[in-house]
Image (cartoon, rainbow, N blue to C red; front, side, top):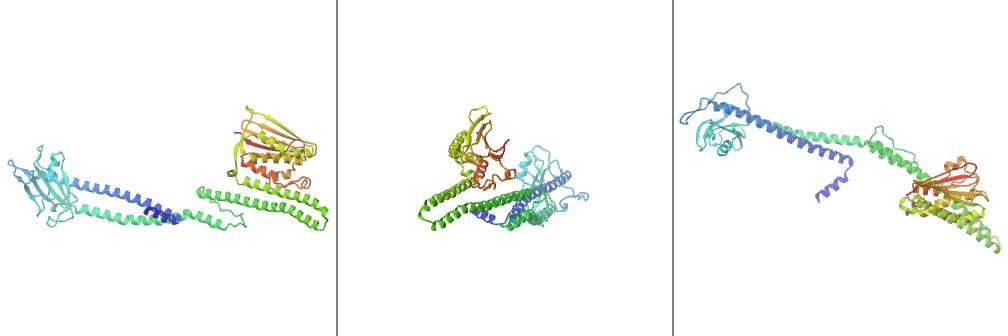
Length: 485
């Protein structure tokens, strides 16, 4: 529950602060763990140096102890070697010799009620250790203790296989405690200061890093529908910010193009829909002034205009379906040959009215006899029908329209040739635009300028390619290429 609340609060803060907190958290944890490791290694090294010095001192003391034949001991006066630098003061060392039975045979220094432990020390010495070390923290029994803790070394005096005499020396750890305290204080002050500097640095760096993004946000907020020509400045550095700026500009290009196309489409559609309605209005006003015998003529003309409106709406709906993308497709395996036959059946009446012959050939350049494609049957059938119908409309009477289906191993190509006037070179770049019709044939050929635009859109939707041009001699050629399955 707590972690869920924490994540919820974390998601509400800005990305700049989030980046800073993440950076400080990672840097802080790493710094603390690293310093703890260094601190532990440092303490161990200081302790080792202290123990080595105490061991050497114990060896020096043991060399001055004489053991008599009857086991009596003699301690000569201890001399302080001022030439040595030791991590403890020699004059305050507590020295004693202890028998394995627990008897204290000799002492040097004011022990008071302090009784160093010895049983485990004998066990460890008998187990083979050269010397044993122990830190004594409860030192209230030592009179005039000079440190918060003492270091006790137990060193064997006799060379027997199982030594019976131990030299025990307890020295104050004043210098070691001071060194540890100083280093600990340095860490306690240094780590928060470093983390504070890291926090300020993280906030500054994140602000600098997100500066271009904030600039992009400001520019994007200034882009209005009335002016889609503005673009986001592209930084010089080749990094993710540059890629983001390029991606946003490409998206703005597509939005502007789609918006302009939509405006143009709405304007053209309004014009195309307005013309039949204007004709119907004029005829209704004329009918008011005519006799009853003119009603049949009016009804016939009105039905024709209604059919025109229905055709425009149907083609616009088909175009909207194509604009919807792949989600609106009903993909299936289709024979392009069958689509051509169905389109020829639909075009037969129009071709017969102009005395045009429809010639269909199949050119097989592949190893297989029949090729299948994948696509939406209704849309692909509309594409084939539109390019064949377009060839019939623009062909003179009593001519021939040739439809050729070329099967290749990878692709199938449908080629439609007519013997009309061809496509003027200046109109070729706009032949597939919506409501695009040549002015020279606009009054002679019926249509709304949507058929080829729909066909081109359907071709792109199926990853196909529809092209237009003029073949040798006279006449236009439309070629549709689609991948086989």
